[in-house]
Length: 233
Image: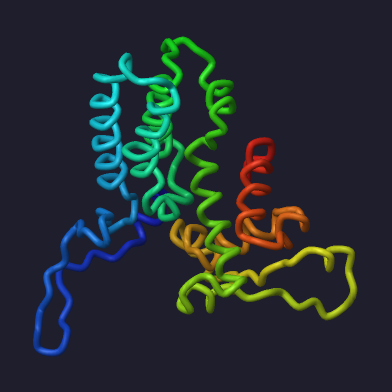
């Protein structure tokens, strides 16, 4: 979290809406996400790690009785699903926060592969064809961007994304570029870079044209996942 942002954040104890005075709380739950007043999502990350670790422990109790394929399906159902839920909100969080989630995924990888703690976790992750936590977040944002461009997302999301129309012919015209929001919005301390209106176009514009112009959602997902393995964004 940017210390400058926290310093500049005004202190508000309550809001008056009409004749009703609403007290300000430091944290509230919204659609299963524990949101704090500075959007650090510290509690949310802690909750995800706790529930995922509990699932890993339970699966671990029966791991020797099941094969690898079954173990992987159980991990996807009870661990990966938790790590991926609402993970687009985690874009731009400090590396220390994402590292906690990555450690959970590493435990899940060792559980599935029956590997020891000193194993090469990166090679095992690639063997399972799992993206690391940071890239899974990027994958989710780009997937939402693709859906927005092809009428597969709610209008309140699709309306945020605007295709860039160049005024003159450039080499970059072969790519499907998106407009970036006004600089003041994109540069807003900490929050601006994390909003979908900024993160979506920023990540999308870095993709090769062949992925941007994928003919279907299935093809896009396959190309994107393969690309992120070798080209983290």
